Amino acid sequence: MDDVMTDQENGTSSSKLVRSQEQLTQTRAEFIQWIDHILTRKKWTGTDLANHSGMAPSTILRIMNSKDHSFNISFKTIRKVSEGSGFPIPRSLMEAHDVKHVDGVPDLTPKVRHTPARQTAPPQGQQAGRTIRVKYVSALPSSLVQSPREDMYEACPPQMMNDETAFAFRMPDDALAPLIRGGMMMFATKRRDPSAGEIVLIVDNAGRAKVRLVTDVNESGIGVRKLCDEDVETIPFDDVKEFGVVDGIWRRS
Image (cartoon, rainbow, N blue to C red; front, side):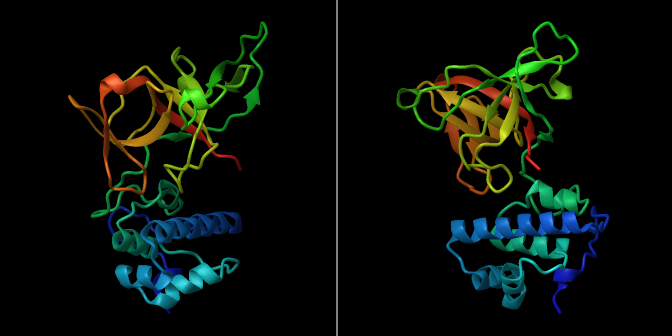
């Protein structure tokens, strides 16, 4: 039997097991989704991934073909997949196993807060809460899209309640999948400059929106990349029409 059902880790992991059936199911689904993404990007088979990760092919195949089975996915298995594929471990899988940092595995997953929120109309004479505008952004040039005529508003996350620059928008594509999918609600601020490891929304002079992971900020511009892509793109400051540093995302349950 492989280590797929165990969860004994050293170092910074507390070896926390995902105990509830609901958590087990969600973590297993996120792991399978992550593997599907790796296989698609790498053009690998499950056997290819197993060979690169130093695992028995039967381990990957059992996980992929037994999606309704109740076994837990050990963090040791997750780490082997990350090291073998070169893809960073999604933060959700690290949190599910109470792992804050893994020696030798780069933690380049976005530094964001997961914020529950609900769509609402702007308050009329009500001071108890606060809503912020949802900006319409698209991966296409503004000449090819038409933004909604009516303004939309979203409940403001608690950590941004006093941020006058805060706004919301929907993720325009799957550049940060599998951690963040297109259509997810994002909350951003203009109060601070982006830094390495954060997520930034950049709207260029043509109106195209890119939401990327920041790798570097220097005199040449902002270095960004997709979550599971090692290619870095440098966007010159002169090409940036608008930006926002993401400080929260809303995952629908």
